[in-house]
Amino acid sequence: MPTTTTQGVTVTVTTSYLPDYSSPAQEHFVFAYRIDIRNDSEFTVKLLRRHWYISDANTSVREVEGEGVVGRQPVLEPGDAHQYVSGCNLKSGLGKMRGTYLMERLASGEQFEVAIPEFNLMVPFRMN
Image 1 (cartoon, rainbow, N blue to C red):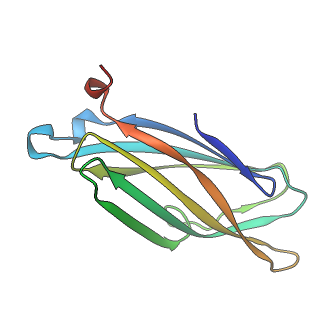
Image 2 (image 1 turned 90 degrees about the vertical axis):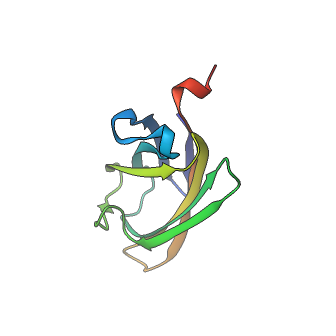
């Protein structure tokens, strides 16, 4: 599981291929990813924005950015964790994602970026 820690905020990613929602013959591959965010800092933080880079093996790169994650802007007290599941589709069965979260320390209003570790998206039959 790819994991990274930035300024006391740890992000861990797990992925899965969703064959029931994919159509390989139509070059449509769907993946789910679960993000676990843990605040091990001494500050209460709020997740404001996300910024993703999604790379497909066919050399295309998409950028996705916006407020919060899956419609929420979670606040994490020291020691708190937040999990969510989202998805991504690729035209090939092979790609990767990476990105950042824009966080804010609520007491000071200071904003900082937290790295989302790069992770691979691969259909199981490509692993052989």
